[in-house]
Length: 281
Length: 273
Image (cartoon, rainbow over all chains, first blue to last red):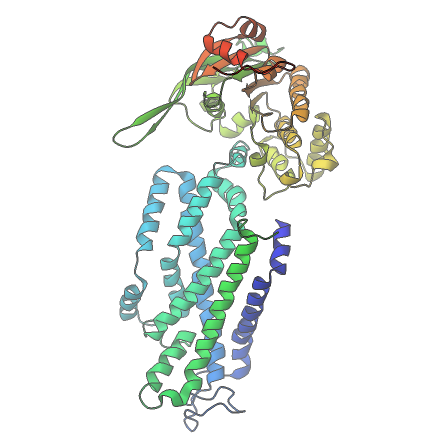
């Protein structure tokens, strides 16, 4: 297992993805502290193009685009991490413990997986957005997590089904361990790499899903995320300015693309190291 | 042997009676597969009993039922005169342990092999500290012919099959079990280390009075290690008795077939008709 981590550090894909991700994380965490209030509107500076004072120009409300961008990166990452972390946990819980116990527990977990798999995200959010007042980032992350875990639970389930037939599980049972202990100490460690990949990909897809929902205006409309910036940019620029104010919607678009590409490249790098069929040693 | 009078059950360690396992599949049109049917035998203390038969004859099914890994459809298994289900799990596994066929799957590739040995202490009643545990592990490994510095702290893939099987035997010694279920312990290891494992079982039997259910498809090994042999076919016991008797004067046609199938050195194999 130790060799794996070294291979990972030598993987070019993984390291390039990680470098881009680290830069974005720094922008998202350190940026907001240095740049001040992202919601501050200077009405004398409406729709100004990039300059030294405002690196990425200002919005049509006179807000600094770069300041907003940094907050947006941070907030989008928060949504992604909450959704990715929670989604991974649900996937492990449903995917591993259910099948391990077998019988009714397995049937229930399979049913839950299949039901959640067909849950349509956008209609769900339109309903939630119309009912719930004051959607915040964490709540959105939780809702995204609740809808994003099923495919991961399915593949974890299939892996647990093969791992639990291995003799070391019987040996652990004969050392007096119960099912939960066996899943946690014997089965899951063998899937650690896969679980990390699930976490990475769930984080990425959740960021994308949140942006998509923000863009159609059914996510939070009060906290800046990348989708929120795109939403206001397309909302405000279509009629009066359109191409004139390109510095408002191109940066979040590029950042979103870079962020997702970084995450997917990290995932691909991990896949090459952890998946024996793709490994080149 | 000496505590026979105390328990008063003729020195029988394990007794299986009418052990049956049926696998049913399908909801409406059920299909039944016989894992084992009406298997009856016993193992005395300090005795090695071989369970022989071809693949799919139900040997491993019987082993798994004895190890409480699967539940029998019907029949009784008694350990020291008590039903095995009357023991609690830890109490039971303190007395009955196993060595599996495939050493490479018996060790979790995620951990170094010490993990399996450390886990074994969870079954012991004494609470030993780290130093005492490692001392016991070392002396046990040495007693079964393993060099502790060669095997401890290593990952399963760095060891040979023979070393791993010895480690598993060592594990059951650490626990102090009286009955070892050895499910084809030598079939996946090198021929050169096979004799070592077999001799280890023999010496443990002699020194510690260990009872062993030795499951094999190799008649030669059965003859080498055991006093008694049970021959199974399609889930049923077709013949059992002392090794010499069964192998020199086989009664059942299947036993004759098995014996005829043993390849011998310096003799051309006959074409199968």
